[in-house]
Image (cartoon, rainbow, N blue to C red; front, side):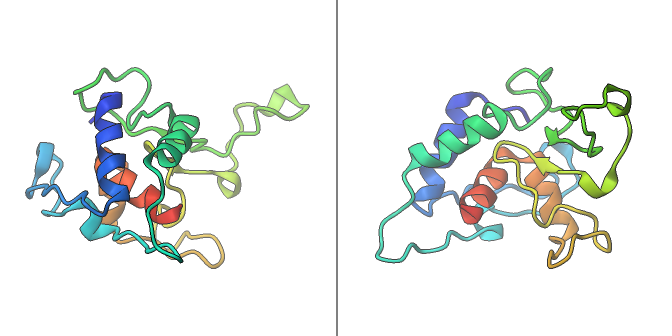
Length: 158
């Protein structure tokens, strides 16, 4: 689902306090997923010395990474659509050779998903990069399809 910016702000505010515990029922939004809670999947990591990551930091990173979008740029808020995926084909569109702009380079694929552009763990099991472990399939789906789970995952990375 494409969230409104205020929904992303809400998720960030909840996540940094460890309170992003909204329950997603089984088959939420007809996506065929199991029931879960965003911070059940991605519990926050305590900061050394205490305190929380400021929500403004998390939101600033999300704004830079995705413009606070979970879905493709053609999706209106409240509608479901394809997830926003960064450089899915590993295209080298900024190199000196315009002739390779549409070539596929799987080894360079970014595959960052959603609001916080979660990359690590999102590759298909068996196709990970060195020292990467794929997230379970249902967890990958939550990151790609639910902005709240994506925000929880992004906070954990941060």
